[in-house]
View 1 (tube, rainbow, N blue to C red):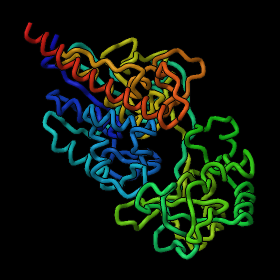
View 2 (cartoon, rainbow, N blue to C red; view 1 turned 60 degrees about the vertical axis):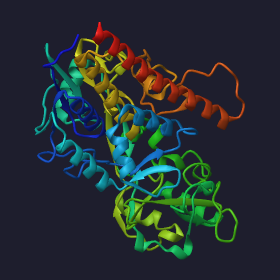
View 3 (cartoon, rainbow, N blue to C red; view 1 turned 90 degrees about the vertical axis):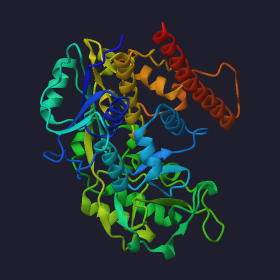
View 4 (tube, one colour; view 1 turned 120 degrees about the vertical axis):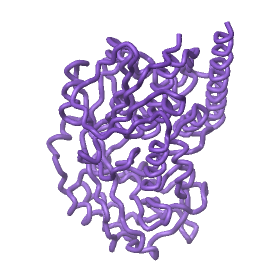
Length: 449
């Protein structure tokens, strides 16, 4: 049954909130997006715009047939995602990854929201969890850095407090990179030479690791609890697992060859932060070292010996709910199905995953308000599998990135990993298309009846 006069309030103007508010409003639903910026900022936010990226400027792989995050992006394109549209419009060269000019990305989303009919933008800090009644819906998408008062109220009413630590990497100016000690190129030749590669010899690598392990960290006592998310591991913590760990991870030279045609012992990759290429991000160098130590240790890499650090890496605590205990599969609250949650607060991890949850929640609400057949996405899609992750009982619940491991197995054994991933992706994209077509047909049939 349609609810023609229903209104929706979305709290939080990050990726999930912006995604949700735009989807709802663009489908003719009266929506209010409440964001506390610029009246108040979290420790990680700086700009006044919506959809601000606070860590990396990369949304990871853009290949829908070999990478689960790339597949999720393609699913979201089919579902009408504003965030992926903005990323496609503001992308910067990054090989097989979808990286964006973060300022243009936020500006694109902000402009689309401001010009969207049926959408009211409101600047205000929300201090308590909403309790929507008949004719109302609400989505809480305040992110992992939810303001203190609202966070306390949410955790008090939903129970439990879970958190982990997240980190961002430093940014350096392009003209301070010593290109005589570097070479351009993408891993395995994928892309158009978008990365600056900073090689290290065996001696340089081990000297770097030794100093990295000795470097002074900020808030070291907090990390002794072991609450660091594996998907955003600080470089110094990773190095502590073994002197060669970085050479098989962040600094792996596989697929990269210098001008002499040889593979270096270890390589740091630098990725453009802006379309103009004036600034570069140290890929995978999330860190919690003190700023002075970042300058000292990272400058040991030959290409960065004179680097100007425009932003140092930082670490902050991310909070997420014990979602399996309190959320339904469509991200609604079990005790009030008119209240939804979205974004990293729910236990999905990553820019794209966060936006996807906002889109999922918005679609579920739109289905109810517009009287549509509910969109049914199963675990053969990344979108559906993430829904299952946040709603399935799990005593060790932790944040989840998009990955092929959460999808329903194919049912046939394919030994070659590339072929298996392609088969999983093709099945997922067809499932999304089928679900959308089925919804359309059933909704049309019911309206005629």
